[in-house]
Image (cartoon, rainbow, N blue to C red; front, side, top):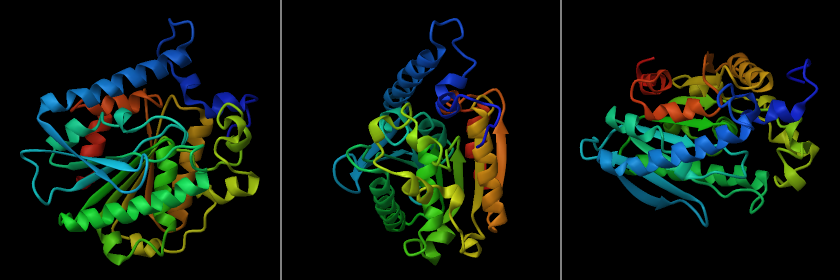
Length: 299
């Protein structure tokens, strides 16, 4: 569908198979995953010695928790940066999601890193509903601490979840729209029609969905009728050069769909990055991806 030249849909939808790193290893696809787990968990451990504090809060049951990061110099009304991790809705957690915290806090942001219940403890449809509960919670939290600007970023499956914010008219009111400065969709998947029945991605239907549900849960296919309400929000759909053709084309077409619906959306391909080091490099204050994220307010 998105790469007519490929006869290997598993490779198209499994990002670790597209890295150009670790080619000296017997299985580069496994090495890049192992490296991601190790490096990102170390980034979380390094935060305390950087003078960064964390408040652990809860927005629901089980894994529905949020870590709020700040430092002694963080202003009370500092802009809030909210990050949603990936993992195909079935793996990873907030301990793999803190790479970007240090540079953002040093640039004046307060950072929220959220966790969510994973499939199969919930179905993907239920997870989308629980994500709406998180959105309601984070807007209440922002108003409580008098934050006026919020940037949301989601990576991979987290980008898919983040798209829900654009299709929740009954939840997102006029004040919320004004608060959201930017939405950043990173290396996401926005059309589930091909992947839902791939055993490599959805083993034994761990997502708990069928064909019609996969279509209904695909942001690429949603009808967006309230773009005018988002006129003050900038949207960025970004993807790594060494993602698969399918991931790149899904991002390109999602950005196009948003633009055609009237949103301020732009597409950007980040060269030399893959699906994983585009997150790993957010721990470096002067990396290209960090400069992009920290300069969003000035774009």
